[in-house]
Image (cartoon, rainbow, N blue to C red; front, side, top):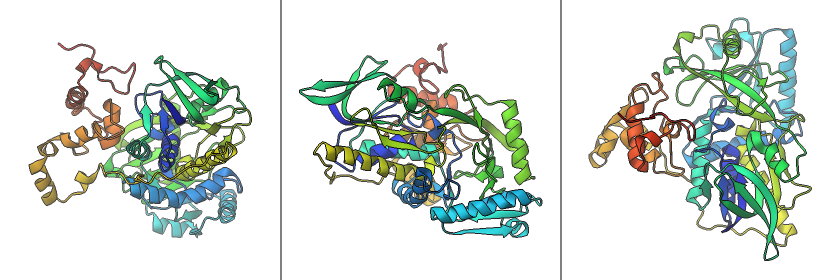
Length: 485
């Protein structure tokens, strides 16, 4: 089969672009080198919906951040993805940082951000009682919020699939070349699976590997700079330490260490911002975590670090010019790059998808073609958290007809067997332990899967009809059970 559009990368950008494309009569294929979607920066970032005050005016980041925030809130509702419109506070500790706040405020106005105000330290402390008494001024941005980034990615890809897109996993691209079929220009995409796929147009959303994909097509005009961010996650007992997302004044490397609640009720601290050699370098370090700890305490001194339940890191893909790369190739017809999507990429993801599809429309017009509307498109997705939202009476009634929902498997997060089975059945289906965790949070609680993991492994093996020894944590080279005794 020849696909109209192939997309490299099933992160939040690739997923949103695929969803946007299914609004039209196109055959769409998403290619992902890992065993699941959201396996790069989309699974390990701060989950912040940025207000848009920080990007340099007139850049793509500035334009798409401000445009993207209301679009993201709307899309999250359609996809039943949890989010919270909690606002952010950027704090200053001295006169020099106060001047930076003033500049950020002016920059926000230039970018079109509304609902901002600068408060004194005392006024900020009335909003956030646990804020440091050393804070002298604060910029409040009411349009900001928090969202679950991997839930958003899973929902976007799933909705695209429900509308006809296909997803190929474990499809690591080895080579891309232009070829012809009956005088039609095509992209021939070769992977490690020895399966070739063909498409008329190709969108490069490969995150930290986007420059490698460009290089395969001799269009290597940019280099991805991998920058790692380390985080600490605290138990739900600490989730109300702050209500807003608390930032410090940003530096040239990023928006600094934040203290924020998560949509699931935890407290998140981080990230650091260190350049690394490889995009796959996601280890955490004592040095990095100490930095997170000390700077988080500067903003909120009373953080209870005894309640840290896990630490992790994510690598974002930057580029030396500091802006998103969203453009059609000057050298390869039919190729579009969506690269260097670091912060505020999550906040901008729906706007980026619309922007990229507009580029495709321009290319099609050059070819004498145009897109036609897919009249069966449905932008709404089933709420996979519907059971959790029911009252006790509704749950009891539901369990009578669906007994698997009455068996609690993960006690920390109160996740039932029925919810886990749904995660294994709804697009894009979970195929491994981490995939179940990201969809329904089984194993994400205080014990980090210490009690529920064996039972979940059995459910995965039974549902996928594979031996227990073939169930993985996150795909290739991550076996959990090596031998059954």
